[in-house]
Image (tube, rainbow, N blue to C red; front, side, top):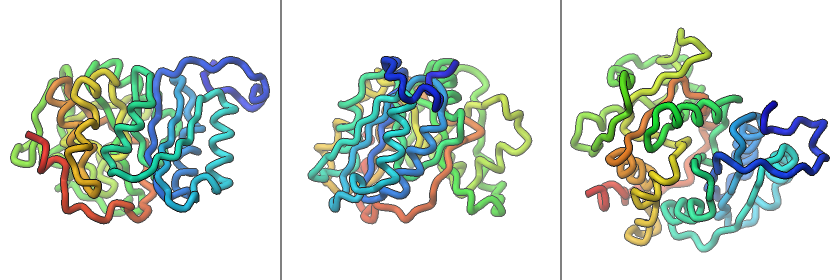
Amino acid sequence: MTSRRPAAAWGAGDPLAPPAVDVLIPTAGRPGELAVTLAGLAAQDDPPFGVVVSDQSLDDATRRSPAVAAMLRVLAAQGRAVELVEHLPRRGLAEQRDFLLGRSSAEEVLFLDDDVWLEPGALAVLHEALGVLDCGFVGMAVQGLSYLGDDRPHERDAFEPWTGPVEPERVRRSTPAFERWRLHNAANLVHQARGMDAATWVAYKVAWIGGCVLFRREALVEAGGFAFWSSLPSQHAGEDVLAQWRVMERRGGAGILPSGAVHLEAPTTVHDRSTEATDLLAD
């Protein structure tokens, strides 16, 4: 028996199971991609989870999207608490993430970008891994499947599994650990996972993880969350990296292989990357 209600029980009206995970999705003007992301969540069985979408669209495109509305209805019918919240004016990515964190209450929070499809069972693997590893966060780096034919073994040289407990680490651009960022290019993790037993997962060392990160909520809050947003101009990038680095220094963090997170490869909505949060606030 899973926490996801089957179609035969969509009309039962049973009380919702308390969520073990709050899935937090920032979005702005990408209703098509958001609908695919929500569809991926609708295929997850366990653990029980809720969904909060913070919408910063300027043209009401998200609320007018039949696909988004349909997937929110499916999730609700399946027994998930769902919220679509308009959050304006725009004050930057860090502030939007801070807003989402403030609306969460579960012990674990999954920050999921609005252009990421999750393989069925991915949420359960992340939840299990966070419990087993007992660290600050785990994540599945997003993979671009258009790169399946582009094998880059030289970019996977930095792959290093955690062979014992996940330990706190200090990562900066000047440290050797920063070079792990290449692991998450293209479809590198797909090629790294080739031949793995589908029933197992491996934790590995990361520089940071983009797009799909499950935090132990208390660890993220302890590290300051995204409250640093007020120290940044509204146009910035790298806020997720900064938050992860701060958690890693205290509780450690790990990537999970294989990754069931697929990047939709839509055009980015972050066009101005001249201000990096890590450059201003990492130290």
